[in-house]
Image (cartoon, rainbow, N blue to C red; front, side):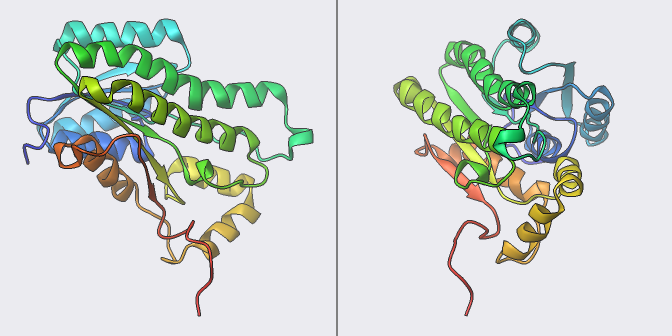
Length: 257
């Protein structure tokens, strides 16, 4: 086990599967005490078991990331359990339905914004005072290549992820002088349960996505996690307000000769 995050306390939302699980496992292997949150209790338990099987330290909380009351309680619990917070990964997200904007139900739009964007706002609002108390740290938010593009049928998702990038930049600006770095990752097509479910719902998008990736494959959650963990680590000590695209070249544009 490396010691990149030894004696560090970190949080990961959406830790029950996919990218969140990979981030949590990577951090635990690097020596961190990991506070995991997800609304999927079974997925959370599995992630924690994987961490503990490698002698890592994990705490779990079933959490609705869009609820201010629950987020406040969670951060207070981390403060009292671990006494500090060094890094936070605001990663939870949903895709919402695939529908043209004129057919997109308002309640679905509001739910996607709440889970994907309001959660990042709430996370940072309550993580920052705890991170500051210890002299600084870092935050990594999960955006998406949909923060750079306009995938048809995904108005709420794209709006939420553009919003995550905007929030990341503002909070990076506000906290750069306080020793807190704030960055985002923009994963492309990644082989996670959420993407598999979305592919079944939107096969045209799935087919295009696979063809549009110059690397000719989807990303592994571990590859996205590695980028997120690097951004949070001291190796990225002069990087803030940045959104790092991890997409196998999907957003390069142009064409192959």
